[in-house]
Length: 262
Image (cartoon, rainbow, N blue to C red; front, side, top):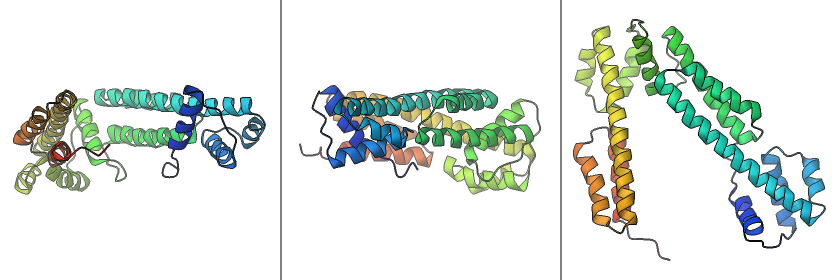
């Protein structure tokens, strides 16, 4: 569903009619757009058809469509932020409840789909936390974080074939060599240290990049392009995690590109 939905046209129509007070003209194209958008926010076909019988009710329909899009987006964004906070604290039960609470009130299918996917992921991670058994359908680094939380709760790390395979996949993304990895995988203690290194490198890289992005954006907006570029150069001078090096390089290329023609 998420690949099929694009609300740019309905947002543009709402802005023109509701914010700039342009008259709503119920052309065939506009009617089709309103009917399609109404379906996408869980307004019944009959209710939408009834609303299109007059301009005042059609305008009310447009307002309701935009409100559902906005409210659902805000709800989902806040829920995802809260889930992230709870995940970092190891409270997967609380994170799952956040998504259940959202699903209890959300009607827009797109937002429900996102919430259901996240709830499934959280349920899978909670199972990893409870059992220590990995799930091939879940993100590698999220599972490492959960295993680290499991260790903090007093559970011993089992050096299984699945865990070794996961670590061998993940260490290159944290700029850890194959030789270092193989030495670490000779014991559970080494594997545990390896997990900690992967997670800390990503945590530090993310924090460093976000701080530099904030400074870069401020300098760019103030007209100091050279200062903005230097923020990304400073990241590249110390960053070893490939993902964040690529991100810094992309930002630097963007700053070096000529501005689009107006």
